[in-house]
Image 1 (cartoon, rainbow, N blue to C red):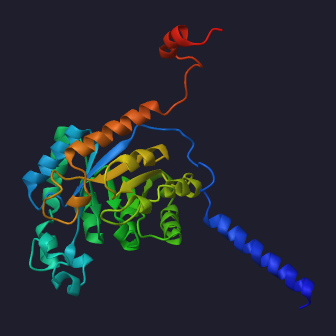
Image 2: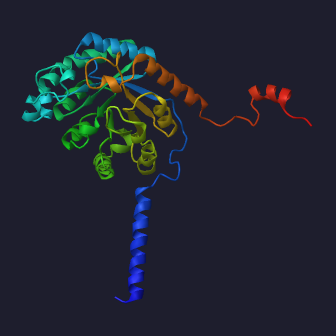
Image 3: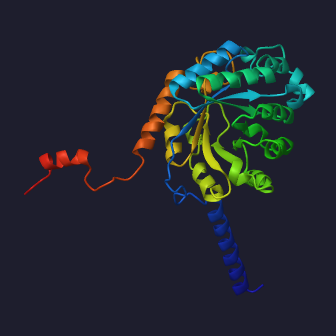
Length: 323
């Protein structure tokens, strides 16, 4: 190849790389969300922070309701289906957090059965808060759809279980909420396309921007992933939310301003309780601070009705320079 040909080939290669870079970085240079804010929806994820005790689970429901959350969420697993025999019989990786001699025994101790989950849903209905649960396997998905919760959640760890996703897509009528922590962009596309095969993505699929870690430092929360979701999926999925595993509540307010319709946070009564998730959870006072901050932010996120508001006119009459 002559010198001119090499230069042209080099130029084409550079241009291709630049275009690929731009595609990978899409959403970073403009706000994709259209500022059509809606009242924030807050989920207090109790998960397994009830420590296997029904009375604590109901107390946490009450505390979440008192803090202003509209939703609570638990977790449902069939542990022998979810875990390999080796995983089931291995010791818990953090023994001080374990409720059993093996990881399987620990998980079984924390598990509520179908009837207990029905009891929790009925209790939520009685106090005026919406019940839901994450499902981690096909059996759990089939069990939980039987009493028709408003929505079910797919955790990041299981969003590649397409047998379970098929159950939720084809046999469940409610919203499917799905987190995309530790998930590649190609895997996200595969998930959305799977729901689109039966025209279920736009009507029923909610995607949560999420970073999987407990807790996650602010630098790894990557809030602009919410913008990426709007850029690529606003027209293809039902809603976009934010599932946070960070400390504090500042970043949740930021996520809401970027367009997250739903805010999900782990919830406990006491961060020092035994268990894996308590340390990255909000306590009741923190959850109330979050709910209040989100509601106040929602109230403020609009343009002025007029150039000079009535509250300003008084100050204008008194303070505005007249010379």
